[in-house]
Structure formats: structure tokens, C-alpha cells
Image (cartoon, one colour):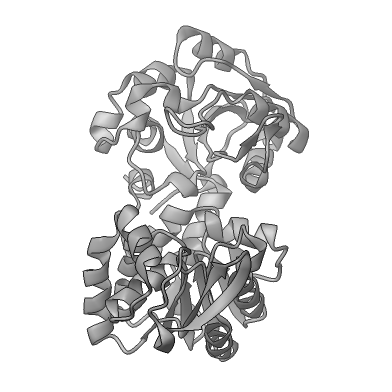
Length: 396
């Protein structure tokens, strides 16, 4: 049983809160604050109830352009919340502990990027994670720990699994809501349709296999790079450009996995046509007319696929979306994602996976979904029936 904020009396209590505010950056700062806004409910509740809140978060990965301090994030949180949010350029040192000790009831401080420390970029079992410098250094300044970082819950890093070994652990409102929705897919109305796209091919094929084997899916539609891999597995010749792209992304072995699933699962559907770029324009090719040599790989599903998939979605009781249908960032290849997502938004019950899926609905300005997840990899893992290390740690 996982405790939630309903079980926490936080008046005057030093609360360590793990959030996931890993965001796109621009030269001027944050390019998108959606992940910060997702945590406003949890943080506002803790602060209004008199908690002394120390925030833990990461931004980017070592070596990447978006690997940065959390100063801009603290400024934005200070704007979003009615309580003050300060920034501390330390995470578990004496300076960090002293800053947490100085907090008054109803105040918050965002500590420095947890991934500035090598331990946080590695994964440990919870007991070992609890013995890392980050956890041992900060834990004396805290009374309790709240994990609201569902988007990172599939990882077993110190800030996610170590603290609840040493402190009473609770789920924040984001974590609670995600587990309630994604952990109860079997209770949603049928027919249940999954649309799996995007570029996380291995994860998506794992989800497809899991939901089919557990009788959670009536139909699984594939699109994006996932759809291309499934087409190759079906024997379709997508052309050199598409095949080389799949190979370059390291997904060649996934063709065999997709092929095994296609041989046994009638629920799995593959695109009927694809869209490529030709002379700067969108050009659609029926799968039956392939191969056609082109310098462009398949970038979107075509009109026939959009129409047939939309018919399936129209008849669904529940639609679960994870991954865009094409390269939606390019206008000429946004049609599949836009049209299928728009149709799904009108379903009786609709769930959107996080990551690129949530980014797509924001960019394409599509609304009306019943639940939009904050986590891409975490939502895929949960939909596939896998355990989430950060959630398991809270239950111990």
C-alpha cells in the first residue's frame, strides 16, 4: 500500500519532493513549462499546509546541450506558485542542508540538478541507492520524502528509490493520479484500442505483446517508426532509405520481434500506405506499390491508413495513444498525428501517453482527452505490465 498526501501531516515538516521538470530549453531559458505546471497541485498543497519543501529534480544528461542548472526552473516555479520558491546551487552538501533548515513553513527551495553528480546517472537497488552520497548527505535535513516524478519512475536512481529507504515515503498527486489511471486500464470501456507510434520501437512492441497477451487490447494500431518496423516485419519493402534509418537507429533486431507478434496476433494492424518527401512535397505510396526508391524514408502514415485507423478509433470505448503517427514537427508530415489524435480526443474515454505524445497534442493544439500522462517511458512500462522501481520503493 502506498501512502499519499492524504496520509501526511506536513505542518512545519521538512519535505523532500522529487519532481520531474526536465524541459526543453531555449537561449532565453525554458522553452516549455508543461512539466513544471503538472506539479503545481502537489506543491501548492504541501506549501498551503505548512510544509517546508525541498525540491529535487534533474535537467538533461551529461554532455547534452540541455544539461544545465535549475535556476530558470526555480524562477518559473516561483511565478507559478503563490508561495516563494528559492534556488540553491547545491544538492546534498552542507550548504544544501543549511538552506533547507532555513526554510519557514510554506516556503520552498529548488536544489541543484541531481544529475550533476555521477551517482544519480547510475541505477542501483534501493538499499545501495540509500547509501549514496546524495541520499546520505541530504537525508539528515529532511523529515519525509514525497515522490511526484512519475515520468522518471521507471528508473532506479538514488533520488527516486534511495530516500524512501531512510525516510517515510509518500506519492504526490501526479504520481497518485498516473497510477490510478494507467494501473487500471482493465477497467476502462471496450472495445479498447491502442495506437502505438513514435520511435521507442522496442518498448512499443513490448507493450503491444503485453496488452494482447493479457487481453487488454481489442486492436493495436501501429504508426511512426513502430509502424515502419512492423511493415518491414510483414515483408513490405519500404525502400533503402527507410530500411537504413531503422538500422541506424539500432532497431533491426526488433523486426524479428514484430514479425513473431504479427504471426500470432490478429489484433495488430500495420499501415496501408506511407508518406514520404519528394521534391519538398508530401507524396503518398500504397504499401502494395512498394518498393519505390527514394531518398526520403517513410515519414508519416498515408490517407488510406488514416481513414481506416480513424474508423477503428471511432468505434472504440477506450483509446490509448502512445507515440506520434509521423514526424509531426514538420507540417507536411503532421497530418497522420493530427487527424488520428483529433479522432481519439472524441472517444468515450481517451488516455495520452507522455513524452512526445503529450508534446504533439500541445503543438497541434488538440484537447478533449480524459488523461494526459506526464511520462513517456514510465507510461509505456506501466502499460506493458512492468513494475516501476520508484513506485515499488514507496511501497516498502
